[in-house]
Length: 382
Image (cartoon, rainbow, N blue to C red; front, side, top):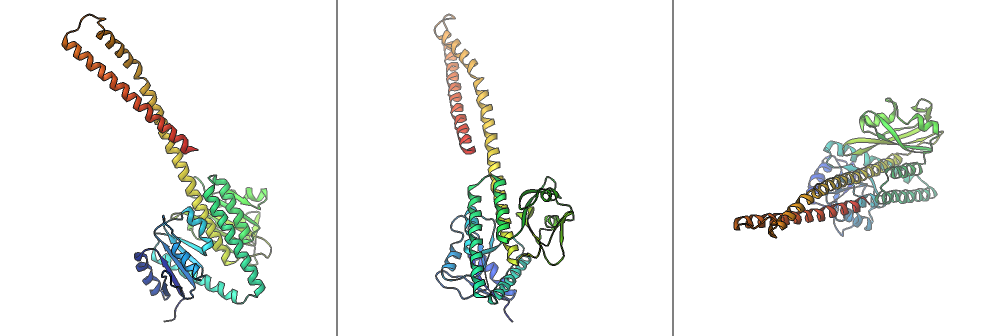
């Protein structure tokens, strides 16, 4: 049987190798399992499965790159950490599949990825040395820009600023005339424009909420990217026509939470790689949204703790006046202010004083605990 292509399989657990190797081999691919310190043979693509996210998730891939493997890589992982987002494109990762994923869906993604890599290689073989130099320079720009986006997501917490950076990068890297980023609205069947680049005021207002028959809404419903070009113009919305467009989904798990789009006019079209780049930037948008949601959840939790601590402190303060009154009466009793006391009465008064002392201790502990909570909450919110 003729091989469908050669895959270099890079995993960080034996279980992942055991699961993926037969799946790709049965589909007709020649699969080479990466080994430490052994240079891999030439391959069409690299499939990188990351199960251990905390410690050096790209260690194995970095090793393969150092030994000369330059094939484009597809990453399989349960999520993208900020470290991974900042490093993945400099390591040649060009596609990302979120785990867990059905075998059929994964295989479909791999087939498409191998085909795109093969087409890119054919195009490169037909390209002049001068054009290759230009492509290499453009590729370097892509990596540098995508790495900057990764660092920005790590450093920034303002979602509007992050999304604006992502749209700017989308327009720059795909050589688009305009770009837009939509997020799902309060209902599940609407999109709202959150960031744009290059759009005139009228155009931005026209697509602020895409119509139900738009390409962006189709992506929201199906979760599948849309890429259009050709001689005919394509309607983004009434009054806004373009010659070429790409719309890709922004995913949170398996749910579509937004759409990233770029547009071109005249004869300018888009490359297949532009859709891959845009999908990668959409992954960055997903990471940014997840990060901001996590920060907002932490702040909300801290605020709830602070409110509860303040309520406890207020209730604790109401204990002091009655305790102080009891202590005053106990002192008067012990000093003979109400006449002599029997031994039994004296024991009862001493027990009351001990109870008062214990209440004062509890109040002090509450006060210390509340101050710690308020201090930690203030520090976290900063």
